[in-house]
Image 1 (cartoon, one colour):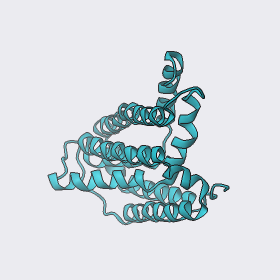
Image 2 (cartoon, helix red, strand yellow; image 1 turned 90 degrees about the vertical axis):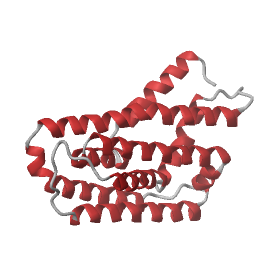
Image 3 (tube, one colour; image 1 turned 45 degrees about the horizontal axis):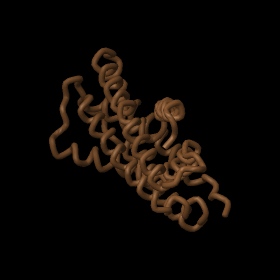
Image 4 (cartoon, helix red, strand yellow; image 1 turned 30 degrees about the horizontal axis):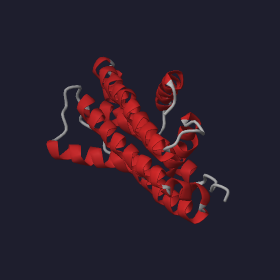
Length: 212
């Protein structure tokens, strides 16, 4: 494990990286705006759960396979891109919601919100590649148990990201309660979110395979 200064740097870097908007943040914010903070937090927890899959994959070496095998990366990339494009099309075709700041989704809908958040994260192979590129920088060459150190840092990064993603959910719900224009603009927000998801899907689809 890194020493205290390195560990603090790791935590701060993780926060900064998680503040950068991407498909995960977009998914959380969209649900908070549409259905309130509870839905946004459930979406964040789904994405949080997905991070543990990537940590496990990278730890056991499948992440290294994605980094070196063009075929494996392409397969996961196509599935992930198709999922993002599907979500984008769904948002573009969504009817204008009858939204109110105090609206609460039905209990069974929360399972769908969680699962889709989980899949949004899991089906993005770039997350596994990110772990492989970022975490080793904080593992000293002399570390005896590098696999355990990698696993510990991956878990810390995922837990460290949770306050940021929950914060996005809360901030979006807070803004929706206080900005009345959001209600009338939800139709266009869905369309904008749909276009962004399609953009993320296309970007992922055309990501170059890692060099062997």
